[in-house]
Image (tube, rainbow, N blue to C red; front, side):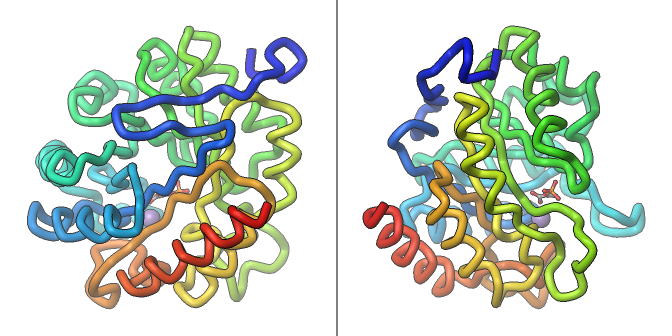
Length: 264
Ligand code: PEP
Ligand code: MN
């Protein structure tokens, strides 16, 4: 169902404030984690200033260590929703557990399926039964066919509002970057599927200094949008501070991204 062979036209995923796919270019930005009502409100203002139409923020966090901050849970969703509404933004937040789909659906405009859950088939089936858009992130060791098949699990339930996200994969050398952004996957995915393909340079780069160049590479290969992590005080971020763009860096990235996009 996701194949171009049966559906040649681009799918445009529509939410209250965004059109994702086709000729549209969509910016999504926000903190890795929702940290407090005040903080996410501040980050929403920054996201909006850069032209983002989607506010990201994790309330249920898939942390590598069980001792790391796990997210604010439903309270975090409330803060995220309020911040998005204050700035006319859509909410993007991760769902980690199939039992949370109904609860998170009350707060979000787009579900995120994280890299670690890309092949959690029960979860994919559960979001596939809703009509809420799903942003599916490529697993760190997933092939292109693996992510297309994962998308198919969502589509098979009747939900075709799928956004494919390249966020870097594990390669033989991830000493200096957290993952390796597979820029080549973007045009390949666009050839194979009609679902929009976006790039997350933050989790690929892992270090702020490499986020902008990787974001621009994603724009240059034709991604339909970017999703980036921003923070005003990265040293004290609850998660992923090392890869956060400060507000000024985020605005710089946006200017350059639009210049490249316009040149395509
Ligand atoms: C995130 O978006 O904060 C996240 C945990 O991403 P990923 O699943 O790509 O690691
Ligand atoms: Mn993160």
